[in-house]
Image (cartoon, rainbow, N blue to C red; front, side, top):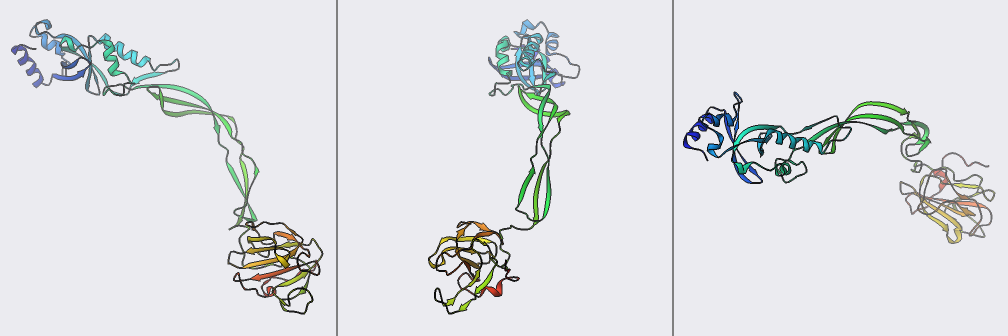
Length: 358
């Protein structure tokens, strides 16, 4: 490509650090391009023309476009290169665009190259196209736009503690309502896709309304077992635990009977899980509750049941109404306690307080 004199001249310039050789794959093949380097910003064209006209070597004046210091494309002039770069940016501009730039460092370097290495603008454009994911020299266009968006302002939640409630008991006493704000962002787009939004201003349009929630202060659940038993109903103790003389029913009484008017409320003696609720032979309408410590309490002869099997109940929660279903001579509640879940014992010694006679 060069005469021997020209090769020696270029070699001396390269050794002096004033000229570099750029080898780049273009749409037309592998081309060798001579470009200027500092110091002195002496162009390769000027270096070559010190020895004679460009035409004598078969090289032509051109402009190399580098991307992050790597030779990307070679076109016929700086005007062509600038037009290509403007066209690429223009594809991502909108009426609201405030600025546009390439993420990469892009330089235009005057050079000498073989005519076949000068690319057609369309070919150069294709290699630099930001959408060309296969190109190692594809550019990235960054644009900045200021936008204002109406956005929700989340409401806060205020919690009010209820001293005699349990922590699993919550209630919304006032629903929260989101507010609204006009938020202004400086938005940076990368090849037309939002990359980063920085909040620069905010104006409240509507204040949010806080949600108010009540929550119990006591640990655990209302349905946990307390480990102690309350009297399951009110009335009169009509039959004690153990042996008895009776014309109807068992002579070895496995519980106690509490008599009162039909419909008198029957409560769970302690919190737990209902393991049976329904008719049970001579027990009539019957409920059995397993407590957290494995104990079981049993309630018989009720006229109406208010719980179902599988339901958890709290201590003192009504589970039915007193009656005389099954084998019974009058309205009463037959009540049993099985501390180990199997053996029935006298409930009276395990019940707290005194039987109320209401």
